[in-house]
Image 1 (cartoon, protein in one colour):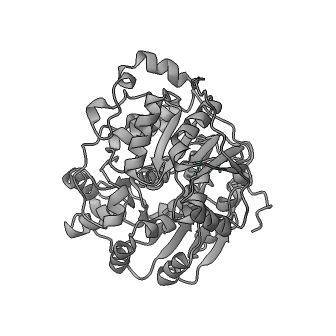
Image 2 (cartoon, rainbow, N blue to C red):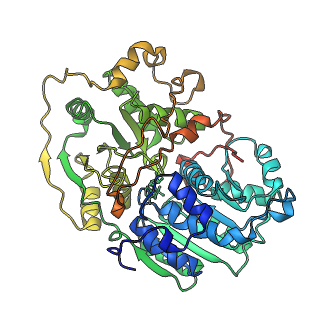
Length: 481
Ligand code: AMP
């Protein structure tokens, strides 16, 4: 099916309860990835799809799975009637929660049950719900294997396997875990793999677990979005922070994600920015789940206007309309650039991605330009002598009446976390994002209300598993039945 073909969800042949949920969500037209993937997945084909978060990929794999499982759905309370039939693996807890929230929304008029499990709090809290039986399980790989070891779930009836953000899973060193999980699944199953970038490793992974897959791409692999204006400044490392503050003040009314390479630099930078009166929060793997959700909610609500994030922590963040991304530190992995700037220019909106390149980072930026096959305009940073104009977002007003903002920045202490900002409800803010990657006139459904409902997770216990993944993807548990 060509990307130009305008299809309707009805013509895709989806079951009535799913169409009703789609309608409730305000979607009117399938996005290109949905228009391409849904018919193929309904035919039982394995897919290797090039699509990043923001393209509507979650519905692209969830809807055909739900449609196919619907005849097997049962209202019985017997756990035996609710075996795990679809397993969705996601690299980070944020993405896992987001995918789960979507699946729950699409399945709401069906008896199909879903659950998300991810590591970090007591595994025992998850077991009772698992034992009642769920057809669709969304999991991070490490926690899934913990459950396998504890024999709290069975994968023997899995018919569908989804690998979401497969490239990130490889980056995070999940390959050994994935191999172990694949060995536990029935050979006869349908596999759907989604990846924003297509490296040789991804192709190897696809060879290893996909069966004669159909390749779908909604954008050129490793391509950057044309809606995003990309520019770069050459700046000495000792002046970088000052220049960043200057930029943040220049783009005073814009919400921005500032990317750093490490958790440590994210924390340090967030503290420094707060000293410079930039209302911000850091989001990285040393933060508890509760802190991450609070930071994200505060950001979505506009209480803070800057989020300092590591690459892994930023994965799966579904923030529509983010106008600005700043690469404060250039990643050594060029693919990260594609992911980072994919946070902006979503839903057909315009975005700006600014990279600050110091003397040690030009070689990494050269690699990025090679990957994206594009030269980014560069200019030498001019540091103003006065950067006194404060950022004027509503974050500033919030600072005045929220005592938390007066306290020194605390990277991991829950006690010092900002107050929970009420998430936006679907009625308070439903944005028309007409051109989301080919969609027409639909209304985006905010995710935030799910997060507002979510209870506080306990601080994580060190989870088992891969050291690299551990370095930045500290997992914690949330169960939602
Ligand atoms: P995803 O790429 O799956 O993370 O989806 C990005 C956002 O697009 C989510 O907020 C979805 O709710 C929304 N979305 C997915 N499909 C559609 C559609 N066909 N029309 C409108 N919004 C959609």
